Length: 291
Image (cartoon, rainbow, N blue to C red; front, side, top):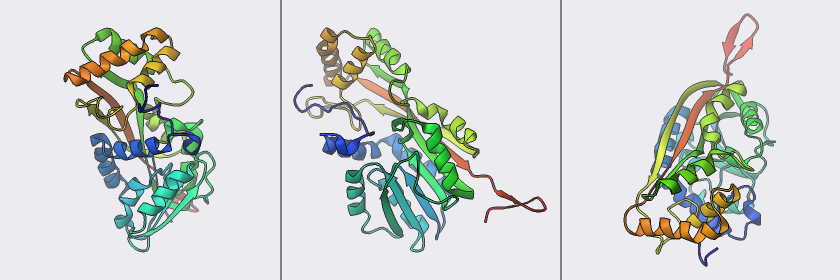
């Protein structure tokens, strides 16, 4: 990989990554995506949090999304953030000093949450399911810990929708074909969120999408478009699935970089989001209760 170039981003083992600082910076950049801001506003309305409630953020990362909801929970509310990375949680802790509500960060596993059944009024998870080995199990855990009548928000990317346009249709087709098939992780889980919540016994209330579009990027100033992977990393992915030969990597990177320098570059990917609700409990006599 070229000196100073962003490596292939991966969030399954953050603390073992030699480029943790790059991952942190990329997460901050991703938080600034138009699609992220739009979906978080949509999520806030859909969750309808009120003062005194408890919110769990599974795969909370730097904690910015959950902390933005602190005012809704008020001084008697609580945020609990769970993440596999101690480094991410260290930064989240630093950023939580002025939070309106109580905050607790915890190292944990999305596939086996160390939280009691029906103990949260709301649970959110953003761009985490694509990094876990079993998204269905993770959503099952989320369904377990949300109270009857509580709400769940899931936001995730579907990388099979990723498109690159640099004026070369053959290059664009290679990228589409390469990302269509999932390899080693659930990279296309975004479009399956509705099915996942239904399979977990939750009631789907709403779903939406937002398209993240990049049209401006100077590869001489930044090794990758904001919040994204480098083009060399993308080329290496294409090689791994036979869409590109090893000797073609430099030409691929050069073609994309030249297009970006000459305002002939655009990229996009679709991010999906759902709001779901845990069914109310049935008590004797057939009357429902949400506790």
